[in-house]
Length: 237
Image 1 (cartoon, rainbow, N blue to C red):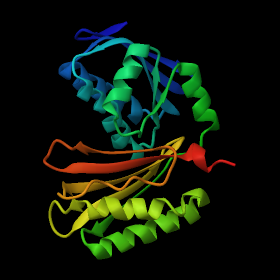
Image 2: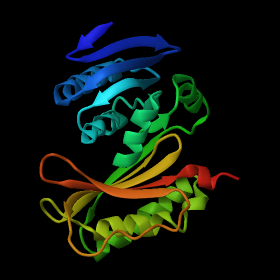
Image 3: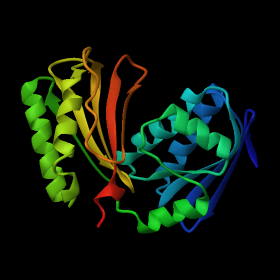
Image 4: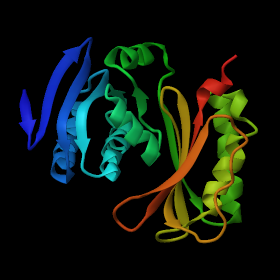
């Protein structure tokens, strides 16, 4: 077993899936090295990467965003899904308390994560610039309506357009006049996000959806990503 500081790392192959077992202490240095490890594995184009979190001591709950960051970085290229198998109940409680963006599917075991890969829908992603203005809100609505049709998600037709428009309304442009709007389906959810600068004022509207969560994540360079996650299980017959 290889060591990354005080964090023990074990990498194994299971049916073309790279399983990365982590145990020990997850601090800032370990997070950086884990990110580099996962990015390197993704370049090898496995079917997926499953991070198995055992008895991990997290020095700061905010560090858990590293898994969401990696998932975002490898989604466009090489297009490798990242899943979590959180076998430790205490670590599951930390994830629930932090309420990170749900771009990464969290399972209770490696077997459950493998089953989700076999049965879940393929991930899809669309990213486009829209003006940080009322016209951008209209474009966001139109894009969401088109996605519901082309991605065959009729159950989101009444929910996704207003969610996308509301995210744009709460975001100012970093530079120029546009913000970056993104739609992302990842196994069991639709995540809509907008990158830009946080606009003051009212809070995000609560979607009329049984399984939803919203929040914002700093990017580290002064910008912020506002996001809303909608569980796709609600769309199934």
